[in-house]
Length: 151
Ligand code: ZN
Image (cartoon, rainbow, N blue to C red; front, side, top):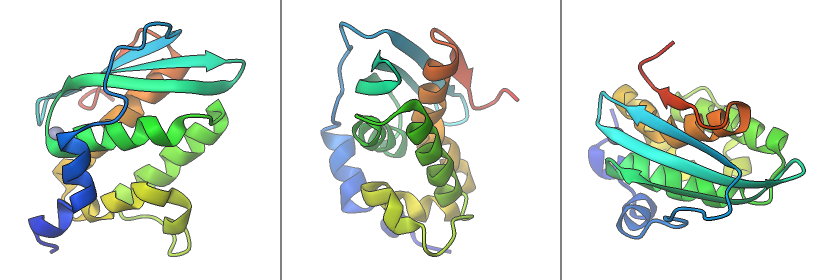
């Protein structure tokens, strides 16, 4: 089992300390909230979509270092992506944190690859994917509140 020190890589700690895109998005046209009651993570994701492209993504909330750093990196990673590209990225990210990624795939994740250590800590998978679930909800059903503890 990987040590906690390996999980909390510098990139994660740094994004937790000073999260990127951490603000309410004034001209957002999509919004969803995510809750992870197991850890107490709660965040809201805002998007500004134009046509089918995510022009801007921001978030705010409270939670553990993993959930916050993940939201920080997620909002940066999906900017400029089409809805389909963002969903494909979520799919790869989810396979990364659950340890089901093909060996050739990590390089396609860029900075998001720092979350690979999460796969050794099943309870942290929900923390790492919370912002992504909120993103997907904002794309599918704006205004929805998603919980990691609902089917
Ligand atoms: Zn958490």
